[in-house]
Image (cartoon, rainbow, N blue to C red):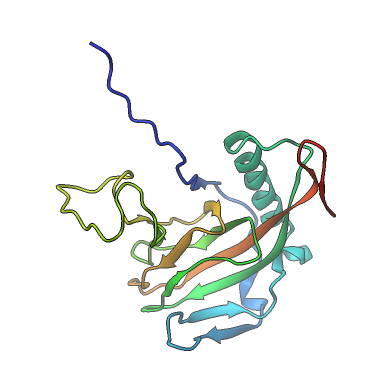
Length: 208
């Protein structure tokens, strides 16, 4: 009798790791603005500076982020070292009690990530959503009843963050943040990643 096998073909690689302790900057020294776009989908504080990893005080954080990006790119995705990955922008978000972020994706980016500087229990999951028009495993017009949900049939999947957790994922993946139900603020560093180099069999594309 042959062994049954399930192959997660063409799956979405969401990477999660706890990086341990590192030197944290004083995020209170940053200037913040309240983010509440039209419709009120988002509601939290975000830093005015969208390149915080370029600050000298964030050098230790930058080293952690770049090390994790390299592991994700080389060891998980197996991208050649001839391709350079670099952070295009980075910012700090502060979620107070009851604050959340609705489903969104990061435009003009290849990879995105979040590093949790402070995250108490109940401070809000990051939730990844299956593409609305995805035909896998079933077309969206067919809403079948499930006995239980798993990575193969779920429409969304959440991670309960802890301090020093990092999540990396393709920027096209829709994600949201559940409401912070704790009495402590959740601090997170978000960032986007792009590439530089010559790509293709004949290096027809060159990004500097």
